[in-house]
Length: 314
Ligand code: ATP
Image (cartoon, rainbow, N blue to C red; front, side, top):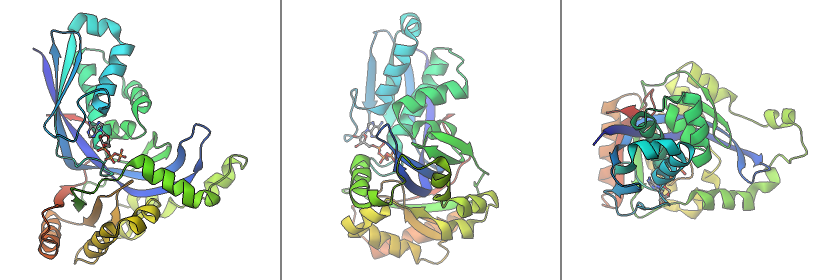
């Protein structure tokens, strides 16, 4: 049985600005995305029977066509029917470390790993561009998860411009296990409350560009200036998540005021909060202090490092 093991890293948003509605129903976004060392492990193997099988060690993850990893395999099977005929079906084992529905793109990263794994397993020799195009059909975060590192993402989040490498920064992450936020809920609620601020479809591209405020944080990333990045963290979705979930606000406040923390924010649609620091020692110290102040076992805490790659082989 041929198989490959892959590392599927989580992402955080250093910046997330909602510009307006797109004709396809999605939001037009400007984001700065960062891959981090918190990661799932994906093992992908050929099997005799002509089927896609998902096994995951986390009971909250679907083992059917609702799993993004399944959807990635189904898309590959549809695009490359001769491969299924030649190599048989595929078994995908997912070892979950990335918390679920956390704003960390865990499912998207699993899907990206399946695209890379099947490209290898089926000896397709796809280019990064071809993988990204397939990834974009599965979900807006999948192209970034393939690429990793640090990137400016526009459109639905699938149009990527790589930025300077920030792999000298560390972070502490905090999420209540019993608190999950659905991404569609966050965007729908934002639309209900803030659509009056959206750029309307009739306005031209220039006015859309004028409304983007990501310039300073992109400059800070290019200068690899951790203190400035921490100061400029921004996420429009906090405007809907923080009033609804005071626990997130409390975590953000607590982490953001620890010694050494350059800035703290909710990632993506939440509810994970992260705090940026300059070293592993500081990340460990912040984690210990927060644990001391919130002994609740429902609170999950992790430390991680910024990384420069996306999907990689074990
Ligand atoms: P994003 O930041 O891209 O919005 P997220 O981190 O908030 O993603 P995920 O962990 O990707 O959210 O999962 C969101 C939902 O998708 C979960 O509730 C889960 O039921 C479903 N899901 C489908 N496939 C997976 C997968 N491989 N891993 C985790 N969840 C998955």
